[in-house]
Length: 473
Image (spheres, one colour):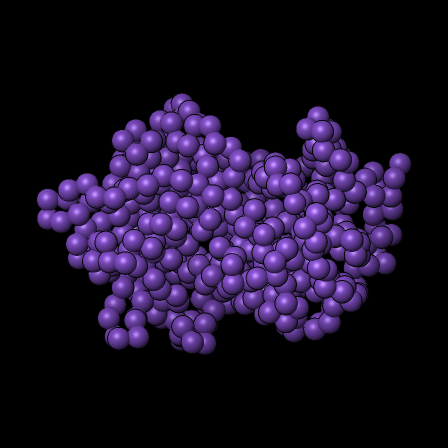
């Protein structure tokens, strides 16, 4: 049984004891010095994928198609998932990677150039900070933070350690979406005063699951990490952690953050001045804590004093299709998935989703359908205008920037991810306290609402030692 790939619980606990205290209390220093690597024309970027159960497997698939990448290591706290994925990688003909259960051990490997994080939301910021401190470049899945304060810490770490850090908001690399934003900047639909993000994604009840013994091969303490350690249930574990406040941010922070980021990007705004949310967990009686219907309104004050508005809606069940988004007219029955290397249309059966954005201007409106297509309607008669459909690859853009060291060429830089995630956290905080919030964009602080301020820092939940996001990175 190798120490890397098949570590038993006793070996794992000994390893954690040796490394835990030092790495979790790093303060403002890196735990080793890694010289900057200069990539030659034939050098491949050695990437480690962290978290393999869901989206992490998409990371493996995407990197496997990029010639400039070697998947040098994988890491997961569920040995069952780790074993399954290793078997799949072998069938794909990929070179066997080094395997780890504890990310901290992986970060000691100086040969790793970059880490690609696809763990649950409550781990994203701490793992990204650890990666920067270890001298690794970082791709971190959305949302890059579980609260807005720790998101600021990631931005500071990326700057302090001069790392390339990409956020997993994939539409930022969609060629048609980039084109649509540019057309709005060029005035195609006139003065853009309102954007509307749509997250209408079919979600069934998760039911109730009892407390039970931790499954064999699952390192549950490490999986829980920064969050409070609570008895194991299936609804607190794989995927359903999205609907529990300690670990997730609801569908607003799951699928919705993609559309929220695009809505803010297209509108041309940063932090809001006012936020108001109302919603509920409707239809089902189950273990879900987050709302499945949510409406949020944001107000932005521009330098010239004008206001711009952003509306966002999460809906979980039967829906119509605003601006044709998700409908057959916009490719709803056969939507081309062109974010990476999968170019074949994906046929949909059963309930359809409406995932996208609508932008309203003085001369017309523009709709984005998912990540890779847009349409416009112009003038009082709403005549069809320019449209486009073309995908991109957020992972390939990240690797290009790792090799070139040109942060300015990142499509989804972590600074932009942090701003969009702050909007996410403000919306959830407004819903949870049941009132509108005033926000100071300069200080990045909620004004005059201590309860909301505590939510924006997970102050009541806290961080469980030794998995603590540091005050000084």
